[in-house]
Length: 303
Image 1 (spheres, helix red, strand yellow):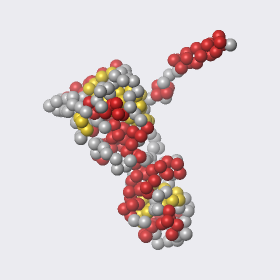
Image 2: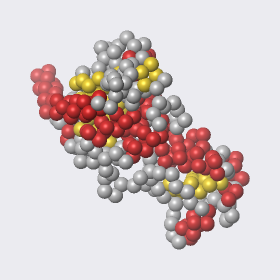
Image 3: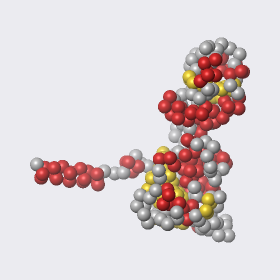
Image 4: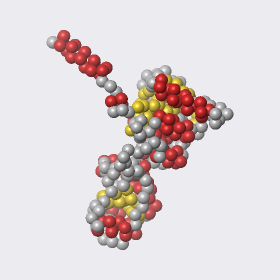
């Protein structure tokens, strides 16, 4: 029995060694960008149509599996880094690297924006020499534009995922701190090319009249009321679901898993409605319309 168990363990170990990485099996590639605080870099890279995953983490340090407290102490040598998994048929390494360079200040060491410390050092870390050659070539071109160039270009030694609360930080905290700009995020959305048939998440408005006409013509949108429950109970559009604005991000993840579904969103005031709509657009909802305030809805309401 012991020999059989040992044999089974050996077979499993061999199968794991011989199994290609998921990214390789799917034709995906990876590259690692350190651009200061990883919240913004992760969000920017995730907006690129050809990027399949962007994960915040800690790269090229001297301590295994560090936590954030250790990293910010500056004693481990880690850089706040984003692991980018991408489809090279949709976006190239050159395009991603050029987007990265456009979003950082390459002339300073151990700092980006208001963030100072060795963990904020800029760098690009690659896991194969062919990618390294591409990146060094682009870095040489970038150097010609500046009086100083402090970006590290190195092979990846190690990478550890950051804690869960760092992942998708700007999606979960739309008003959270970020040293990158909206212009950086907009450039990301048009980097590379989108897969055929891919819809773009962008802010759109619809008037009550057009919404009512579409519904009368057979459209069946999900109507989202982001007011407080007591407001919803006092009168709402027929068929609406109540996802209060303060909990909208978490509730939408659970209640609205289809990000391509047709959604009309409204609140009491137009400003709150617009805020909720933009929050869901930032989450990737591609067919969402801001319907405005309930006070502008001149049709039937139910209690």
